[in-house]
Amino acid sequence: MAATEQEVLAGLAEIVSEETGLPTDAVLLEKSFTDDLDIDSLSMMTIVTHCEDKFDVRIPDEDVKNLTTVGDAVSYITKAQA
Amino acid sequence: MSTVRDVVVTGLGATTPLGGDVDSTWAAALAGESGARTLENDWAEKYGIPVTFAAQIKVAPDQVLPRPEIKRMDPSAQYAIIATREAWADAGSPEVDPERLGAVVSSGIGGIWTTLDAWDTLQERGARRVLPMTVPMLMPNSPTAYVELEIGAQAGAHALVSACASGAEAIGYGIEMIRSGRADVVVAGGTEAALHPMPLAAFAASRTLSLRNDDPQGASRPYDSDRDGFVLGEGSGIVVLESAEHAAARGARVYARLAGVGLSSDAYHITSPDPDGRGQIAAMRRAVENAGIGYQDVVHLNAHATSTKVGDLTETRSVRTLLGSDADHVALSATKSMTGHLLGGAGALETIFTIKALADRKAPPTINVANPDPELDLDLVRDVPRDLPAGDVAAINNSFGFGGHNVALVATSV
Image (cartoon, rainbow over all chains, first blue to last red; front, side, top):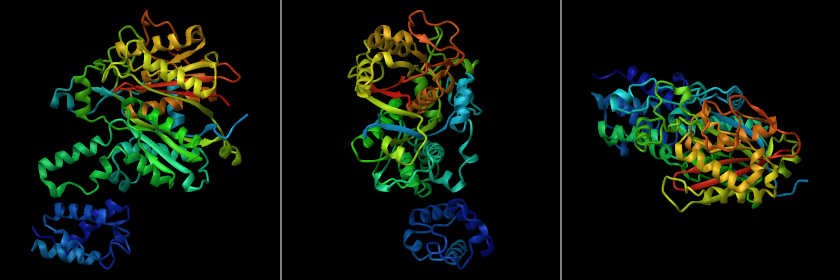
C-alpha cells in the first residue's frame, strides 16, 4: 500500500537517523542531504538501498543525483509508489 | 639511559571476554576468571556445530558505540575502535604531528560477519540489497583504517596478517616504524570478531577446538593433561607506542619499554608448528638479541599456549632449548586459559598482559591446570598471580600463527 508523504518523510527520517546519528526531527523537507545533513555519496547510496527496501520502490542511480533535498526524495518515493 | 630508538608503551586499551576495558580485564585475569560461556543461539541444532560455547566479549559494542558507527563498521573494527579510544585517552591524548603518527591494527580473519551477511543478502534478496558499505567493512585493513581516521594518523596505516600472530606482528611493525624514524607515536594492536557459525564450524572441522561443552569455563586448559583444544574468543587489544624521547618530552606515564622484536617463519607445515621448534626458538632468540638483554634477565613469559595437545609442549620445549637453565626462573603464564583464543587479537591482548605484569610486578595465573602435563618442565604460574622480582627485568610474549608465523616481543621494565 502506498504511503502518504507524511509517512514517507517519517520513514526516511528514521533511515537517515540510523545512518548519520542525527535526530529524526532534524530531517526536514527543506534540508539538503549534502550541505545540511553532511551525507556523503556512500551514505547516500546506503540510504537509497534502505529506502528501496522499506518503500518497495526502485530508485535508479541516474535519479539519485537529482535528489538534493529531503523533500525531493519524499516526492520521488511517493510518486514512485503511486 | 634511553636512546632515540627506545620505544615505550604509554597507553593501553582493550575489550575482551573478561571485560570492556583494560582495568576490568586485568583484574579478572589476576582473579583467575574465565571468559568462556555457553552461546545463546541455535547454531548447534541448526548447523550441527559440535561446539556450543566460546569466549564472547563481555561488553557488547552497542553499549559503547553510537548506532551509526555500529552500522558502518564490522564488529572487528568496532572492537578496535573501542580499544583505541581507551588507549588514546590512557596515553593522555598525545599531541603529535599527524605526519609522525601511525596506525598498525591487524585482524587474522578480517570482516567475516560483513562478508557472510552480504553473501546471505545477495542470495536471499539480490544485488540491489547489498549495502554500499560492504567492501570498506569487510576488507581486512578496515580496523586499521578506522583507527587511522580516528586519530588522524598520516605516517601510514598498516594491517599485517599472520593468523594468530597478527596482533603481535602489528605491534612489532609499529615498533619498527618508530625505530626507523617514520613515526613518533604509533597506535598498534589486533582485533578479531569471528564468533560466526562458519568459522566455528571450520575450526571444529580442523579438530583444534575444545569440545568440553558441559564445562565452558574449564575448557581452555593449557598444559593440563586433559586439554583438548582451544576456545574461540574475540576482542581487541591496542597499545600506544611512543619513542622514549617523545614520551619524555611530554612527561607521559610509561608502562614499559618494548625493547625487542623477533620474527621468523617455520617453512614446515601450513598449520602444525615445526616439532623441533626451530622457528619459535629463532623468533625468541632474535627478540632477546634485538632487546640487548641476556636470557638471565627474563623473569616472565606469556606463552602462546592455546590448549592444544601438540602446540603447548612444542613451545615449552622451545623455551627450554633456548633459555636452558635460565628458564628455571621464568614465571610462565598462559592467559588463554581465561580469555580463550582471540586469534588476531591474541598477540596484542597478551602484549598488554605482559606489560601490565611488568608494570605491576605480577604474573597472571593459568587456570584449569588440574593435572599438569608430565612433559611440562617450566615454572607455570597456576591459579593465583605470582609476584615478579623488583629491579630491571624483562618478559617475553610469544605469538604463533597458522602458516608458521612466529613473533616474539620482549618488554623491559622502566
